[in-house]
Amino acid sequence: MNAVAAPAIGRGTQWRAFRAVLRRDLYVTWREFPAFLAQVILQPLFLLFVFGYVLQKLTYTQNGYTNVLYPGLLALTAVITAMQALAFPLVAEFGWTKEIEDRLLAPMPTSFVVGEKVLFAVLRSLAATLIMIPLGIIILGSIPWRWSDLPLFVAALVLGALVGAGFGLLMGTLVPPQRITLLFSLVFTPLLFTGCTQYPWPKLESIRWFQIVTACNPMTYVSELMRGAMVPEEVPHIAPWICIVVLIFSVTVLLIVGTRGFYRRAID
Amino acid sequence: MAGDLIPEESAGLAVEVRDLVKRYPKSPVNAVDGVSFSAVAGEVFGLLGPNGAGKTTTIGMLTTRVRPTAGAARIGGVDVADDPVRARAQLAVVPQQSNLDRSISIRDNLIFHAAYHGVPAREREERADDLLDQFGLLDRAKDKPDFFSGGQSQRVMIARALMHAPRVLFLDEPTTGLDPAARLFVWDRLRELRDSDVTLILTTHDMDEAGLLADRVGVMDHGHLLAVDTPDALISSLEGEGTLELTADRAADGAVIDALTALSGVEQVETVNAAAEDGVPGPPPSESQPFRVRLYVSGDAALSVAPAAAVLAEHGLALQDVKLGAPTLEDVFIHLTGRTLR
Image 1 (cartoon, rainbow over the protein chains, first blue to last red):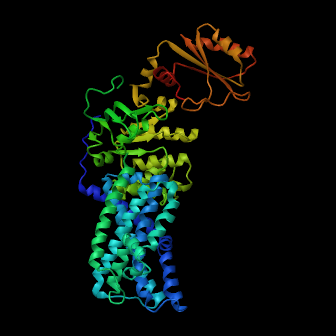
Image 2: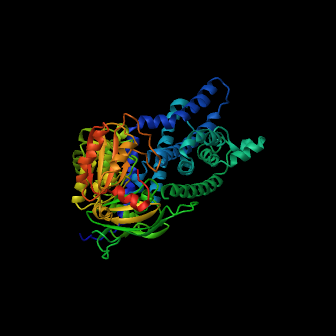
Image 3: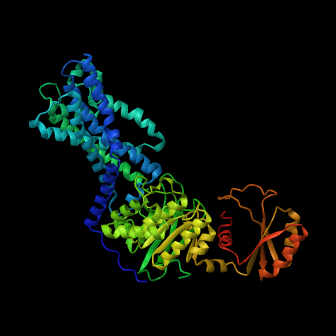
């Protein structure tokens, strides 16, 4: 009955576990792809249709409003998709399905479980936002696009997804399951309407207090960065470097606090 | 194996627990208070105690999900607090409540679990099919776990746990809430596992389960491990007593108890009813309920069967069942803690 010494666990084993967990998430998304599409693009799709097409046709909005709206909707999709990909599953997995336990017991550090969740949320967010491009072309006829500012566009996509993932991690670990409906009304809705997705921030000068409120929402900087990348001349916007600095700071804080929350839930 | 709390030779132990303590923040008392025990490869170790005794917290610390406040625990020689990743590779957990992945089929549950643990692709497919077959689940391999009964989920979770060939398998109340057939099935599989040198650590508040499955039992209460030994040794520590348990067709009054107590050799008579856990009394006995009494007898309990049956007959009760025995683990628990477990 002599036990052989337990084998050492190399980085290889840990990364294998990480990849296997990511593969499981992608596998489930792939198999439920129509549900995924409905979940992530229905809301921006309707916003795009009503504000970008219907109101325009009825001449309630000026020509050129789509220049304001479209980049904002991409920002919205990037942030909200990543947030939803993390917050709701986490509340359920820690609260009642307990599905996360099998991952927490896999041979990898708990930080890898968090990292996988964030990476998966970012991938989902990128997929959803990129789908909005052909949809925009179909609904609006054309979309504003500048190849020269592609790096800024990519930065806005990735930072937007990371901000969303940070929010999702924070909410998913802080919100008790019985409060999940509160999450919708108290967090999602204000976040949605103070994120400068439907209006450019510099123009809010005339409503000073609201301009201050929106400046506190990281999503504002995603919207403004997106405008800086797509319609820098047509629409006034916050300077991209300010957006990038604020977003990197926000992402860092959100991920650190969110990861702490995750550890608190994962290990007693 | 019997006797010592910790065998002197600690090399080769599958599980080794020394002075383990857990105090939750804001709690005035330790949930686990200085627990020590060990288990060798192929041993079944049962932690027996009522709800709230600290069994699940102990298992939580051994499985890296609860951080110990003090003390140490090793799985296959690996310290769970110092190197949780390496410890996780050696162990598997079957929890009380299903934690199966509801988005994928049970076969995929098994396969992805193995992938998390680095089992090569072809091997995990073969092993999944073997285990599903062995656990009688092959025809449901493609079903999602949503509509599985408690017993079926339990079987899937045990099969899943075995996918990465763990050295130590932890089972938290493995058969609580299962119907008798499902429970026997699980017990059989667990015995097979023990024979293949897997160490099983199980928690239970079920005396029968502990007595039938475990090679050694640790009796736990209020965070303390009160005794650790083989079921036989624990029971024989209550020396010189035999028991006789009688079941009659309907409820009886005190006169029957008095008459039974008056029999020669009978030291004590106790009515047995299906009381709830944690000392909460069960429903009062009614006319339709069968009547069960336990007689504690000095000497050979078999000699008291005929006189006791005669007493019941005199009072118009029909004897339905007779159980002869030495004292059980339940009596050991009562002896150690001064109260009943159920």
